[in-house]
Length: 412
Image (cartoon, rainbow, N blue to C red):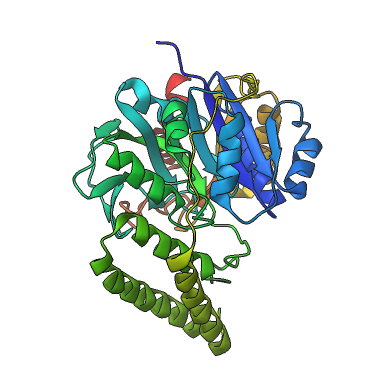
């Protein structure tokens, strides 16, 4: 079967370093054909020039705090059969698109979503979930790693994450893309509900993985303390107007207030916020709720065909995956070896083990090396014991088995 052409849309604003790392990952995908569409501010455009990518990707200059409007601009010039989305503070595994597009092997699948790992590169932020008309998500217990096609139940939708999802362009175009009323928060959830309302099925593909860092922005600090809750309030009010019966609104809003207050007080207890911040943020939440209740909802006309030809990106990856493993004490030499291999186009996994029980962490470096550090006797997943004895060769083999399909090692 011929692989579908995919347009990958990335929106970036005021996070040039994160965009650079995201593009490092996107430029080394084990997939073809795909194009990259970047919707970004001036800082983002400067990153493209610095990386020498300005002639290899499609771009839209945009510097407004509205992710839905930005994504729609990206969809407008996307020419692929499938449009995939990833955030600028995320990096994809090399086989991300190979796995994500498996969901579209079902002709009836309108969308496909994968799993998202957190900032330590090990634990999951999100896996399979459903969402209801109040915007409340619930986990789906899926067994194994095989793709699953799911049809939404009455009043619920299959949840996909905005940083790891794909939709057929024809379906996106017909729906008018993302609703600009959602500047931030619940933007993809609204799309999920609209897909469900039309009876569209969604595939969940566990092995389509991205690593998401929750980077700092105008809305949250590096320590994840909120800087503003206006958009959360506004988006919640709009979502309820669109999808939830009026009689349930008061209860949902009361729950939102209680949850956000509890979170704010936890941040204050831990020293990340001051009492005045709690008062200010609470007021901003209320202002957003009030604005969302009366906001004029824009019409969402069908998005026309892209005026641009498909621009296939020539991946820097050769398709060859290698593993370099050793003791942390030899990290300088091992890192130099890993960088040299990455420069040839290899997908390089570098395993650095200390003689300890430290938990493991994974990151993609700016040199395009997947570096995993941790104790030789430490856990790399929550299911493993905190300590267990192992030799270097055995532990290396275990970690390779854990990441083989995501990193393309099963084809090596």
